[in-house]
Length: 269
Image 1 (cartoon, rainbow, N blue to C red):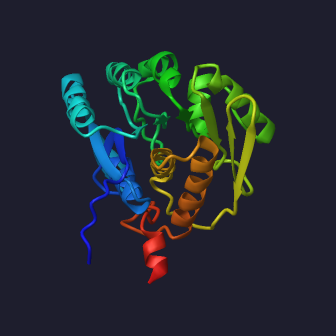
Image 2: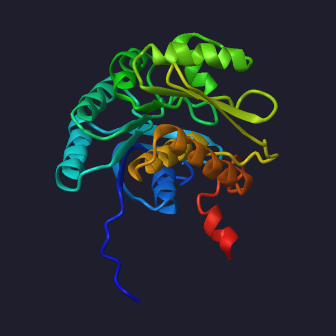
């Protein structure tokens, strides 16, 4: 076999670690591998986490986060960046400053709580997310709980998703992807830049093993952007990928299992 010499696009995740392997940087790197890009990581926090919840979280010092970021970006370079759990106002502001100086699209997943309801962002950090992080985002991907945290808008229907998108866009991201997975019925998301509206619909699968969906979706979008896709194309492809991963999610431990990041590979066998 010929040796491959082409370098795949590089995508950087700036996020927390999930020791159970279903979410966080572990989910991000698995997604990036599955979608054909080279994944790199800046660790912001370490969690003790399993299928039952988060038992502990320890954020890294600002200097450690900055050093990891500069180390990767200055030597290897990036074609897209994805942010996840940033834990504190100091880390949010540090990461926002680093992103502002990086010429690459940025997908911001404004992680506030875990799938189990555990807080992953200090309440005082919300102002920093609004004022510093969202303005540097190419795409912001809040779920409905995060929309409520950031804007006070409680979405109960598709009209509410439109209002939520307006509120999120007012903070400065170029595109808002409002994830409606918590609404009843089919899984519907709204992608808009304030002009074009893209409604993304998928069947809802009767599978409770959905740990890591938000991380996976944001990483899939970043992977698409790194591959040169425009935002609507990257988001549509990410939605297809994460829907398949949810459908193939499996039980681990005694609680909520992860989505299957390798579902396409397993499907091919």
